[in-house]
Length: 284
Image 1 (cartoon, rainbow, N blue to C red):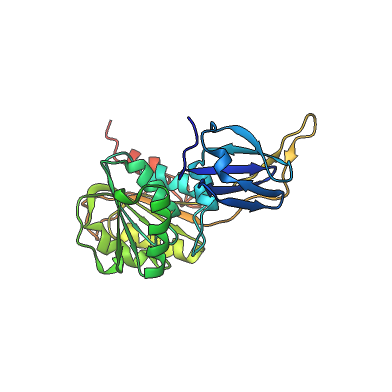
Image 2 (cartoon, rainbow, N blue to C red):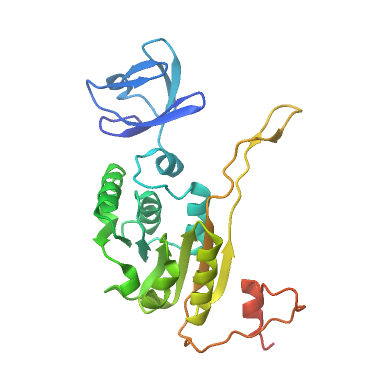
């Protein structure tokens, strides 16, 4: 596939990379000289070109990960490792209707929009108009805006939506929105939240259990890169360690007074897994 005018490319120079829109009569300046972008038009993705100082660079199609880490942002974005887990634990699929609150710069919004596809829809909520504008800008660049409906509102007060497949929150106080959003979810819909502190996790888990959600899990993901060299492979001293915590759960029609059955474990082990919870219903 060839590079067309107006398309985005990822330019790779050693350990440095950029995402650039290819336009005629436009130069892109780098630390290794400038690039006449018009010279890229018609070339295949994966080709090698040179800057004005005769420095080689690689031109490839931007990936979802590239967009997540490189596009302009108004707030800290959710890292790819966390975004991937949110998509899995939220069971996000094509054709679904998903609510996201706390769109920020739209990095996760775009991931959700890509997955739900042209037959799905993402309802993106944020309190700040500036965040919604930045999200809209980034979605337009990725040609995903048609799949997203952006709204300025406080979801903790409830939303005029129902039968949602999943709710994804990146809010300072996600636990406040649990009860209000429960009624907007399908009876077996999914809830996922992202929080930077333990206190937020604790309050969110308590709120979910008190409101009748099941399979409640809280975890974090640590990403460690490796320096892979012949006979000298070792962990890189730089990595993406703590970024935040994920809380995930599944909705039910259970009432607030519901108490989940206690697993048959030793008293000191008081952290039942999702599977232990559901095994407690096994009558076989």
